[in-house]
Image (cartoon, rainbow, N blue to C red; front, side):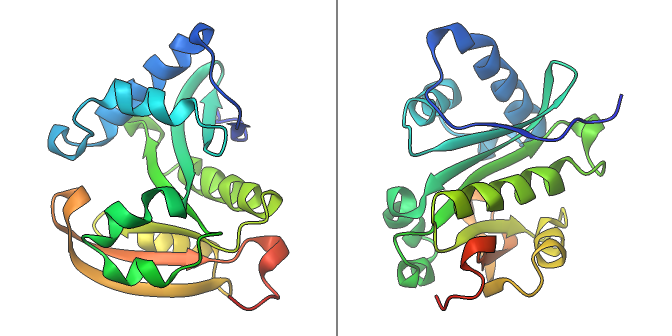
Length: 186
């Protein structure tokens, strides 16, 4: 079954949406080694879901979530991220950050991540965000995907030799302008 276009849900998730949370937790556990996951993953995602400034973008195949991406205002995570990436402090507080992007194993390399990144970029534009940024692993090609998708819009790109949130793998920090901001200076 082909993956349908990503479906964003950007409002609070009610208790009745426990199945959405379960699906997201399953995708997270399938996508990342245990030592990369948040200490209490369920509690962490529940805390993200109740904040209206955050946005969960999910890609569905039928009724099953096969990938998700979480957007947060950069100002909410900037202090924590700066402990391992001090350069992030130079970015504007109007930027958004991709907190996580996960795709179920059997759906990888089928356009799910691309669809969610494009949808997230549009969502940041609707919110009048100045930039959208993420720390992208080199080993899985996420950095190359973002460079390809947003060529011409990338305004920040630097290497991090050992990003602690991904088991000290090499990563790039990339930030790009959303469509409504591409002609403005950052």
